[in-house]
Length: 128
Image (cartoon, rainbow, N blue to C red; front, side):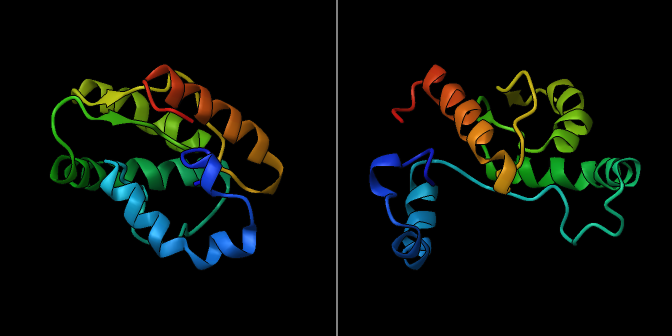
């Protein structure tokens, strides 16, 4: 939310209290956030994570088809998700707009996440 609505996110405590309002606004602005997996990862090692993501791709594709219209921009977050899903989603005709992985915004990757996502959104006309 700090990337999409930077002028409205200034206080972590207040922002967390308004999470529902931010998510509703996010949805109303045409954004969707969906997980590639419905269940938590069984094994977080890199190779097993990729196997689980690859196994979930058919269901992910069906979820995406149900949510979006043709030409909707898709951004893949997390290196393993990007590496497994990018080519397949492009081959399916989806408009994946990031040409490189965007890290998950955990503590040590927040700055890089915000920078890459902000840049990408600006390139596609979103005012951040």
